Length: 242
Image 1 (tube, one colour):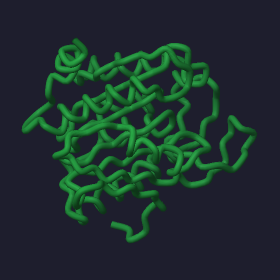
Image 2 (cartoon, rainbow, N blue to C red):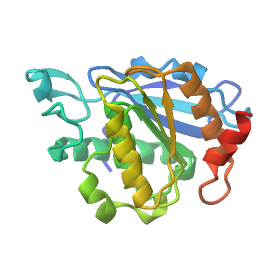
Image 3 (cartoon, rainbow, N blue to C red):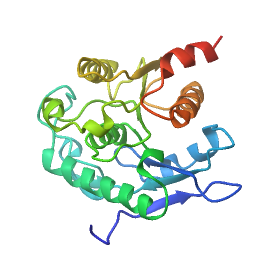
Image 4 (cartoon, rainbow, N blue to C red):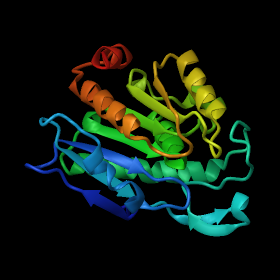
């Protein structure tokens, strides 16, 4: 494994050493600082001391933005997110860098099954891509306002270790940047392949709602408390809301 890692913002838990870790991936043109406030906004059980690791994506030319250099997990070539013209090279480079961060957390004492992969927009797409292909079982995947990358290869590349990994997907009903149809297509593909993503929509555009953060906190509390396999997080969340 390379000794070089993506530079990261880290938010350590209060009250003791970390017991869990969430690797949280930002969207196009942002950086790790962009989502750092979520460490205080996602409410978790006292027994979960979560380290937030927020890496900065490499700067690369983004075709859709006239070739401008900016932080990006991969190039975006066209407006349509439902096509098959994804930047496979960039996606795989970023996935390898994310896997290296997971391995580093394991070396720091956090077992892979206590590590969550999460992200927003481009970062959410990378969380799905990387998490479903991880050879070590991870705790959960949180994918906000995103879509599925290289969907045609998922069936062949999926890792058996994460066949039952809990997945949360949230999307804005009025999202003009990543249309909700792209999120729905991702959800439907995952469902057909045997996953059971928790799908939630919110009356917002391309952003993260307070209600969504509350749902993510509930989802993670359930996912992290599961001793084996995927909990019925969707049924449990319905019960919590009543």
